Image 1 (tube, helix red, strand yellow):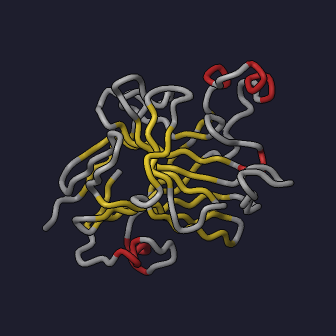
Image 2: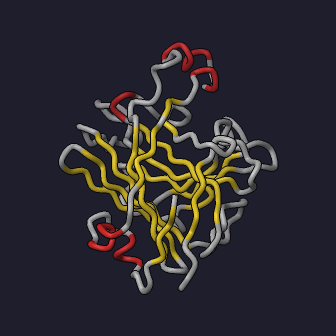
Length: 225
């Protein structure tokens, strides 16, 4: 998919899912599939989520725009309930969540969330953490680590039976762990993950976008013109 260059787009507009600029950015509907039950970390989780039961959300509409220094992704998906959780869990389940994922090296495997020396970087939004996203790194199943909570900015709104969420970061960033570095005119692997809190989805229990390039879709960033 394409990240459209919007000259002079302000950070506040990029971060607002209702901003007028998003009406001119083409969105792509991406199919999602449940993460395999066999990849879940314990026998108890695998028993609770047998094969085929993971992945409540089946598709997400995704649009991307950048201004030459920052990039934002607008995600929209149908969800009848807004599950915000409380300290990670409440009576209705876990919080709804979403992430955009990138390989920090082209050969990083998606479904295992990377491998030793091949990290996957996720920019992560949770409905119970408004405003501040999580910058996440992983080098395999069970290794997910939050790198920081400042670089990724998020904004989510639930209305008309759907979530409207923006996840944004500077194209390039310095962090304590390897993270995705993007650039105008460049390209990188991309995936999306959605967690449906009311169905108990969290951690590796998620719906994920599987693309044609070793599991990744391709994101192409417009050059600056």
